[in-house]
Amino acid sequence: MIKVESLEFKYEDGTIALKNINIDLDKGRVVGVIGANGSGKSTLFLNILAILKPSKGVIKYNGEPIKYDKKSLREYRKEVTMVFQDPDKQLFYSKVYDDMAFVLRNLHFSEEEIEKRIHVILEKVKATDLEQKPTHFLSYGQKKRISIGGALIMDSKVLLLDEPTSGLDPKMSKEVKHIIKELSYEKKLVVSSHDMDFIYECCDYIYVISNGRVLGEGKPEEVFLKANILKEAGLDKPWLVKIHENLKLPLYRNEEDLLKIRY
Amino acid sequence: MLIIDKYAYTNKLADSNPFNKFIIVVISLGITTIINNIYINLMIFAFMIFLTTIAAGIPFDKYIKILSIPMSFLIISIITILISISKTDIFLWEINVFDYFVGITRVSVDESILLLTRVLASITSTFFLGLTTPLNNLIRVFKRLHLPNSIIELIVLIYRFIFIFLGEARDIYLTQEMKFGYTDFKNSLKSTALLVRSLFLKILLDYKDMVIVLECKLYDGEFRIGD
Image 1: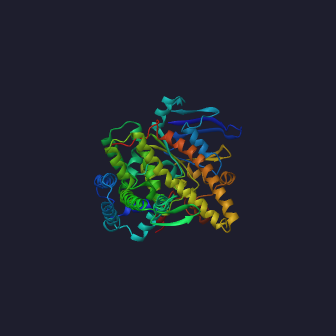
Image 2: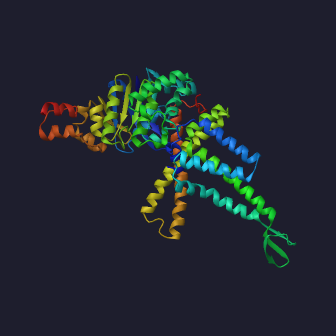
Image 3: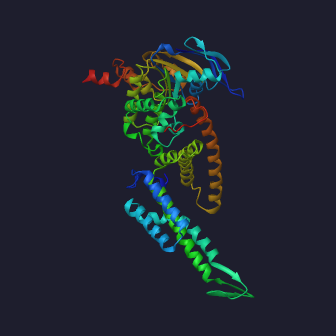
């Protein structure tokens, strides 16, 4: 799928944001990218989206290096898209329906097809009641649903999610987790987050990024046991790992497993 | 959130047919401009107040408050029309300033009353449309009228960004107020300047982010609105 090979990214002023990054998104169905603020996650995502062009190295999609001409980029972004952190910045229309339809109308879909797809997607993100609502009446969580929906509607092969749970209440976070789980059966997901518990439960392969470099990678149950890497990256352990280490319990992958066995 | 917008979406007539409302308003605007009779104007005025406050259920005190903004302009302009200056005494009521008379004439009174009722009728008519029709419904009307797409696009986008802009301005204002930024006149001036500056910077940054999102959404230079 997507392979990042010895990528380096320099800003115009010469500061190196990413250095010698090697990432293979085939290693997991839901790949987590974790790192402290300013570690380079967002820059990496923008490189993968081909918004930023690497200074060195290549990004390969299906074995072919990405081409940066307008036409190829358009084709590429039909397959690879992203849900940004701030939902307000990705809603352009004052009506939910029109906003969801935006990308499809750009691709000249017929109105019937658009309507059909919107209904399916709204069902998926549990927002059918919001269809005719004005965007500025929505709560933050509802806006988040719509912005996720707006990215899903294109039916891309790869979906990047930047901090999908930040600023959400526990219930909504859980729902996002659920949505991610369901999506993982149909497309490749790349998730960045500061919420280690969330990453631990959702992802099956993890890259730890710090200061623009890949500090470590591996399956969550391996990566999160490496205390020195996490410390250097300025991250914390998920609570399930903590209770495994401190209370001598087995290492559970999620809360449900733990509760099932304990009670 | 703008109070006008809130009422537009929550009033009792919000979901009624926007075309009917639009036609009512266009007809009443037409009548006040073409026939221009004081009594008919007053009737339209009363009818529109009835429609907005009783039929649509918008609280009367809030309605008056919203109306008071254009009213203040109206009163100032009416006063300037009402008062005239002349060397000969043709006035109903006047004061003498040196060789001149300053006062109100029969003609200016008639004219002012006619103008006043006409403006009242037009303002209440447009307010009826604005306060009871969600913008998204109005857009359907505009499309039916075959307004150029680029104008509709502009309306849609400006409308959306007004709320983001106001939201950001409000956030900055609240933070400044919590940090005692508006305690005295000097502080207030400084804070206002800072507010404008940070808003401007924020808009530029937001614009950069927006371009990225637009790229992802395969924007090709046109905001389509569908049928």
